[in-house]
Length: 457
Length: 167
Image (tube, rainbow over all chains, first blue to last red; front, side, top):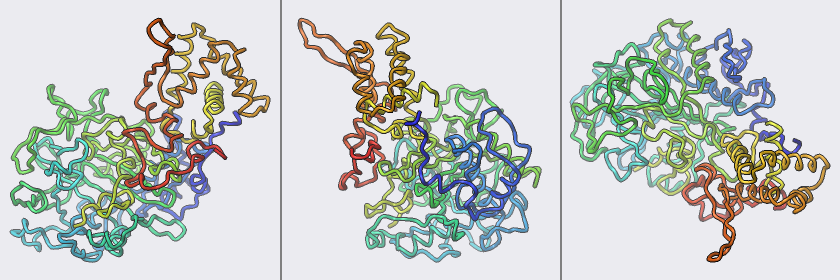
């Protein structure tokens, strides 16, 4: 029909091949090896594997065929972008946080990785709106950890206090939706952190967005820098990580692990007692949000440990899961624990989590291909235990009537970060862009898809 | 898209006044058309008792479109009473469906009540996709993608919602 030719928006044409991206070796190698997207659903598997690169991609690479791109082919392209991000951010790091190019992802598993050198939100939004230390420095340990000599801590020790995506989760008044703490199979609370890269941090610092007074003075919508392929500049990126304490039912060899100060701070969470301990924790979930030139709504990628949870309606694939007990027949699925919530409880009945929206066959095939690449470098790479759930991206980024850019897929959730709001009900179920589009500064201005600025004091 | 879907979207664009690119964007993660077409087909067949009626509607539309007629001319021809009452009623219900996200049922006048129309929402998704909200340059109750403070600003132009120039 002449009057219904699919019309691709300009922004997608700008993305179009041949690659206009001064991007990673992975992008180029990916195409050079002829790894075209398999979106046919026929299950054809490309013989080649993607090259692993420490370079952060600055824009998606639109592959061809098919031509013009379709929803499915672009989803594949964004999913490839997500894996490129995951590889680059989890690359072994030098002491200054740059990728150690003498190594490849999966090698030297005890080393820190790139994103672990980024700035955790609590070292940005300080009490009384104080100016945070510049990039490369950190704030002193929280007072509740004063009994620990910082010099005795392992390098890059994390500081984990959050028990939910949102701060102050124990404060019911600030709790959005039906979210709640996620309890692991040992009966312990899952812990969280949110970090920004240097570009995003510097924007916050340079515009005094770290304090309420600074946001009031800024008095404008936030507009974080996006990646610029022409200038080869990395834009704003933030990550959200979910961790569980190792031991008990958790085998550390199945997780990317780190040392962390796990603490409860009455100054941050009303009603808890001061508590701090050094624990080995394992990564169970990772969000990556990256603002690119063609996607001002950001690109939202989410990864999980492969053993987190079974998919609803599907046959169990494992005898044990990180957040699901196959033997429990009367456990309520995807329900937060009863109140009151207290991370200091020695034991809380574990959460029973199921994935509501299945990982697509196309994403599974892509996971397989990157797992082959990771295994080729390190046969027992810890990263083989992680998989892409999906990528949310704007199909119409320049829409004048929808600032969310009509995201695809419409809904996306990580079972460790949006455990209780999975599903496909608008304004209720998890959608990265639909939710973060509502974010504002403390001065009531648009916060450019991040709630971090609400943490300013 | 299939020929049937092409005709469904083309006819819908003519009858609603919205551009086909709005009703069925090239990249369409919402994909309400995939819900509407089978619903419309089944309802028209059931209510008219004529399983071929939808096919004849689409065939008529395709014939008119092939003649390079204007949308106004095609719409007038599709709603011509000469097509038959069920034919025209189906086209009118198609308009109702797109604008409200619901399916109408006409209740004839009785001795105790005048004629009326009741409607049943097709789905939660169809509620949010109703074109009536777009014409209002607004959003469904309980579902807004506008940012905080939008109520203090002029909405985008009507053309941006309808996809039509000069709307």
